[in-house]
Each structure stands twice: as structure tokens, then as C-alpha cells.
Image (tube, rainbow, N blue to C red; front, side, top):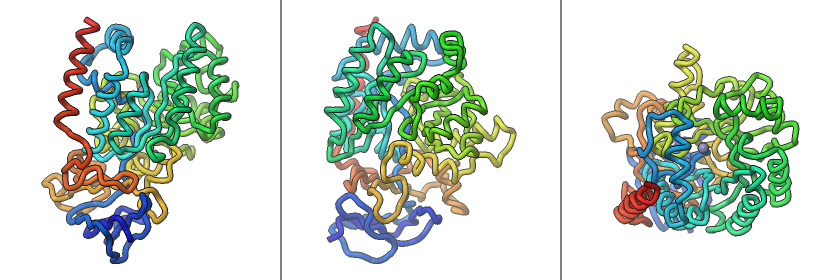
Length: 423
Ligand SMILES: [Zn+2]
């Protein structure tokens, strides 16, 4: 018997919006269109039934630092605020911060995310509790003094958590960035990744300072160095990719690297504007991420889609670049492809990671073009229902699994304690 049927809504399919029903059984979409009886019926009247959003780059533990350090230069931001706090973070803090992030994601329509951070057992336990899907990586700093210990922690994390929580948790290796890891370290990470069959999540070409550092240390930019040592491949998820030459774009395409674009973070930290129209034109899979909450400062992927379209339109002085449909693809199917997950689209056989956007709102009226509305008008708070792996995490704005008030109170307390330990 079918577990769940979602009826009465507009279904967002690869062919556009259609009327009908979506059936779910054992966590998989089993039927679209026909009337089917089921154990549970969800009424999606006035709603858009669409794939859950995929946040392809974030650091959920950093939700504890939301609003803690804003409007300061990047170096000071890291040295005086972020790193001193992160040095004091323990697993309990990361659990509380990640669970708060998961709560915000469920409320705002994200069903899957890629996270890189520290004290990752805490993050994995939070994902397990939340019901969300995630690809998690321990962020490794691979300089000479720490390389051995960092790689050991990374390997242990992969071993412990890959395919945990009924397969909702997958893992990646997370070398932090080309300028915080030596080429020898990155080569070893590539070997581990090949051996264990797990992907790699890395920050790449985020700032001009990184490129200058790489050129003075290694005589070439980040992308060229990674290509030279055989690090790049279709299993690499590269966050940011702001400072790329046309040659770099060809190298990324040649290696089928997946890119996570983080427009809000790039704007807020003054990092620059990634050449996303060029990446898309070059046939590269570009997904979307919010980055951590200290550089955004929220996890609303609807807002991120809007930023991704607007930033490039104003940069190119061209309203036709990055259409609403392209932004939607970046936040759904491209995200799923970047994380290697068989979801991101409402189609038979795909994982049942589905959200319902409530269109019965003034800012979503009149309904000339609902796909345009999803990108240019909708907010995370318009999401009424969230389903992950065929399980209902929120229905008609009511959370089914998490105690919202307790999670917020715990995060508030943990964040205050953390800051007091640093001061
Ligand atoms: Zn990041």
C-alpha cells in the first residue's frame, strides 16, 4: 500500500507545473498523476509540490555565531572572531548549532545539505535526530604539523558515519582549501577518497588573496595546481570558485568538477563575483549554497536563489543572465548531482525529498508565473510541508519530529556559554 499521497497541488516536474497527485512508498516516488489510495493523504491545496532544496555548501555549527561578527574585514573576521571561538567549540556546541540549522532548514524548504566543519560527530548526531539528508565532511587543515592527525580524524569520520541513519547521512573528505593544505596532503586525500569511494568537499578560489598566495608559493593558481597533482575529478565539490580564469573553467569542465556557488557569502565577505554564467555556459554543474551562518546570515535557499539571479544580472548589466528556471535547477537537481544523490526532481523512482510551498500569500498573488514566483517572491517561511526520505518532517507548518522551542533555547544557551569561554 502506498504510504503517502500528496494531492490537489501544482507539481513542479522537469516539464513544468502539472496538476495531479504524487505517491510515495518506502521513501521513493512511485507514481505521479493518477488517483491512488494511501495510508496518508496530504492536501496540497494552493501549494506547489516541488523537490526539496539542496544547500550544497554550509557549516551548520556556525549558526551559533549568527550576528556575532559582521561588517569587519575578512582577515580580522577570521583571526579575531571566528577562529578563537572555533578553537573552543566542543561536540555539544556543534550538536546544538547543527540542530538549530536543521530546524531552520526544515522550516525553509531545504531537505539536503553538504556540510564541512569540526567536531563532526556532533553534526552527524544532529542530522540523525533531525530527519534531514546530508553529506558531511570533517574540515581538515593539512599543513605539515597537523597533517597526520587531521587525516586520521577525517578517515575515522568517514568510516563511522558513511551511509548512517538509513543512508540519509553520507560523508565526504573535507580538505579545507588549497592554501591551507599542502599539495602532498591533498594527494593523500585523493588516495583516501578513491580507496573509500567517497567524494571530496573543498573551498576553491574563494578570494584573490588565496590565488596570490598560491602563485607565490607554488608558481600557479589553485585550479592549475589541483589539476597538476591529479586531485580534480567528477567527485569533487568545489565551493565558491570566485577567482577563475577562462583556462581554469576549461580545467574544471575537463575534470567534471561540481561547483557550489554562494552568492550571499561572497557579497557579505566582499570576496568577489563568481563567473557563474560562464560556468553554466561551459556545461559545468553549478549548485547553490548559503555558506555558514556567520557569513550570510541565514540558511534560506529561496533567498539564495534570488541572490544568484540578481547578482549576475547587475554584474553583467544584462537581465537575461541566470533565469528563474536556471536558479531553481541550481538549488534542486544540480545540488543533488553535486552531492551524488538520486533526488532533486519530482519523478518516479527518485528519492521522496519533497516540499510544499504555500502560495496563498499576498506576495505570491496573482499567479501569472509560479516558477518566477518561487525565485523572485517566495520565502523560506512559505514552505508549509517538508518530506525527507518519505518521512514527514513538517506538515502544514507543524513540526512532527523536533521540539522547536527547546532547540532554540539550547542553542541560545550554548552560544552564550561559548562566547563567555572565549572572552
Ligand atoms: Zn565555506
